[in-house]
Length: 61
Image (cartoon, rainbow, N blue to C red; front, side, top):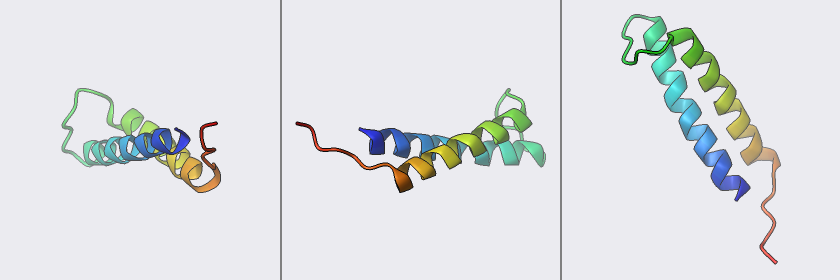
């Protein structure tokens, strides 16, 4: 369960980070603020990667 959440956070963070960086450099594909999208994408990406790296899934009892 934790690995599924971590994978979702990582992929979502990558998408938000890419869209945010593209928006900062001129091609804003969304109506959202590019800086906010880049910062949130970075936070979600780092959180997802660290969860994948350090958390262990326990088998269901």
